[in-house]
Amino acid sequence: MGTFTILLGGELVRTPRLERQIEGSRVIAADGGIGHARMLGVVPELWVGDFDSVPANLPDDLAAVPRKIFPAEKDMTDGELAIAEALQRGATNLVLAGAFGGRRADHAFLHLALGLRLAEAGTNILLTSGAQEGVPILPGKAGFDYAEGTLFSVQGFSDLTGLTVTGAKWPLDRVEVAFGSSLTISNEVKGRLEIALERGRALLLAHPYPLPES
Image (tube, rainbow, N blue to C red; front, top):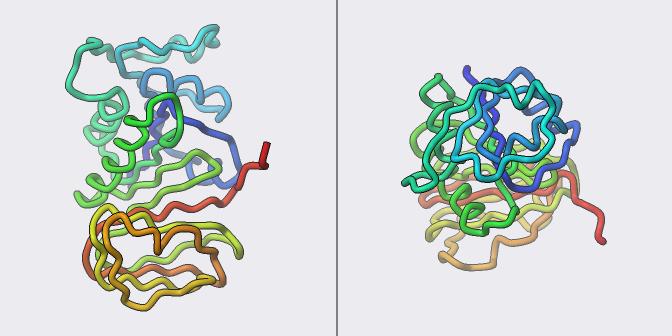
């Protein structure tokens, strides 16, 4: 299966879990996302965007990455362009690294919505900052390998019908969750986390590496 890591411009920390998730994957950088490559010890095969957010003092190997340049006035973000390139190259699994945070809340929200759309089209999606992960939840059942005590939320992107959560401090059994409800915010893993959904769309947002409070 073709796994690609897309380097986006949001927050990213290197963790052992993230290293395992991107190991052996092909890498494409979206504009300023190239700045994460040195920290991760990777060299992208392609660098796309309008190049308005290029980090200063890139090492020679990153500065030499082949570029696909787009105009600043375009109808897709640099991140979506990078994802499109990965799909054209055969991606079936995408790790969107740097999908959260950053200077633009609109871009961060887009990554969440885009992740859901791609999942509905059949692509396996993981959104990550290293410390926080997002996984699309669509009708069906899925299991997760998070450690005991991991904080997680199920963020609905529609009304949810028949949501079941097991392996959690606060389990749920085929509940209805209205769009915008806070019912499924701030739960904790207790055992093996499994989530089933009959109808709707949501994101599992988990914190496997909680950052220390400042």
